[in-house]
Length: 238
Image 1 (cartoon, rainbow, N blue to C red):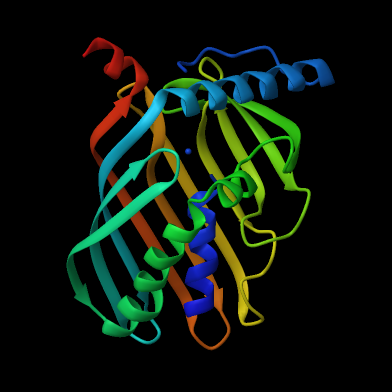
Image 2: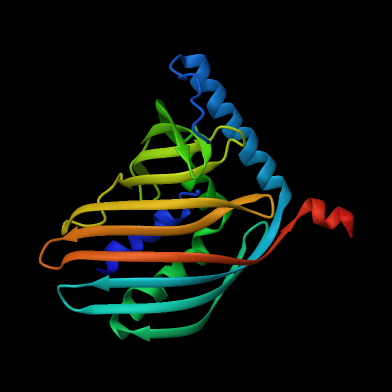
């Protein structure tokens, strides 16, 4: 379970309409335009975001062994790569706490260095893209794209993303690890959702399920609540 949860952690980084129907974006030029808008959004947001403070609740469980655990964490991010977490409450299985949650928090600090963040980003440098459909995402029109990693590593996923048609932000990601977390893991599916917080698109939740040989189904869920988000525009207003 330890190797599985650490692999799922890496996907936490991957480095989330009305009934209106948009014209299908089937030509290469249309797809290029979608990707260009996504790249522009990412660059603009990276310039604007100074930092944030958030409260996260981690929950992991394995029904076959009747084990579950919850962890509440206060986390601060300050650009370029300061990422600090403090545990405020824990309950349940001590084994999950030590082998899963503690390792996730330890790896998070390492993963927020520049090179690791770049490797985790869903960009044309790391993935190939294929247009799938136009769909509604929580009341907003989105482009659904299939993504295929150009290399198989712990940060990469095979799956789909939904890009907000107006903002160019990724609002949902659904997929599986490009590289199996371990020999014992038969199947893993991860869903990650994003929302706009004070004008910045940030992850608001993540869920995953895995089928593991002998251990059966394991689940991991992380809920995000943002206490404060600091941007360049706020600094200029002070």
